[in-house]
Length: 71
Image 1: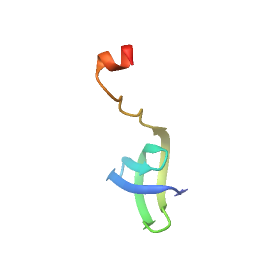
Image 2: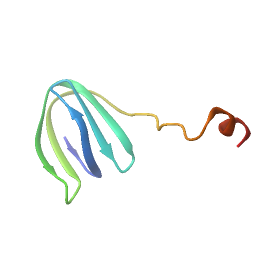
Image 3: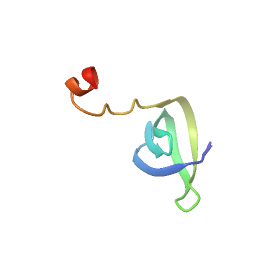
């Protein structure tokens, strides 16, 4: 798999990877995951393994509870 727009790798092991992209944090779940290449200048990440799931984390809520209710 080749990903673009990668800003950082927040965590990675052979079962789970958390990649910060320009669209948010992408969680990759699978088995035998390995990073083959990462190029911070171009924002490309190449990885291999069995990928079972790709999902973006929900963005953190901004402001206090009252600020979100009454804006």
